[in-house]
Image (cartoon, rainbow, N blue to C red; front, side):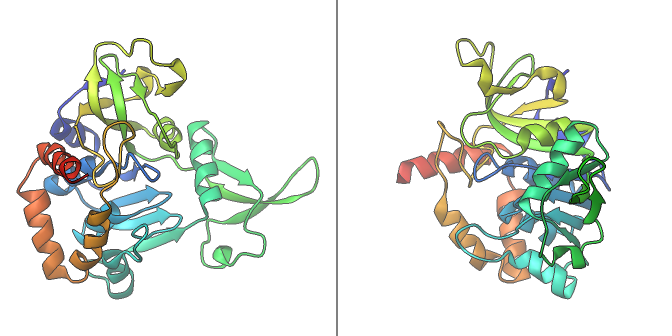
Length: 285
């Protein structure tokens, strides 16, 4: 059953050195505040998992907290590459980074398998693709009923899943509106979960029950972090900060500017800074 915690407590109690961690969010509701708390606490040697790692994974990698990345597509959306990720892969800066690349379909199916307690995901895919030549975790199985050869990948079962959502009630029931990626599946597949939300309410009231995608018994910890998805967006609360994504390409270009940004925007501030940034963003709209 979910318990309400501060963000600092939720991360300290549920994310441990050496864990496999999925910070999931697709286009919006990306849990930036939670990832920044991991950086502040210096929790390292992590295996990060995500369908679409973007700038928040660049930040974790650049801080030297990541040993392996399991992913499908990585980039600064609408801008280009992730410079800290590339430096880690090509030059081992600040440390070597092992990568395991999949397609979106493989990742989504692997999360589904993990949520169902299955050891593997079986699906149609990778025919004629080269990824299986560089990823030994992409294999083939033959259907015992039809004889069809299908792709197979290991189920994803993270130690911890971290997501952001619009609301939760005090029982830990989580409401998400807008685009859904694999947030629900990641939480159901994980051993532990941290959900940050824009607000915690006494009762979700007359909101359509289908929006409550995670009942409280599936969640370990809830933390209220207004603005916690910035610079991505939270439908009904704030829009995407496009300028932040454009700026990141320059900031991440070398380690000095990257380290300066981390010191100023992560290490020297707390979760409340996210609400302040959202207020600034709204003032410019």
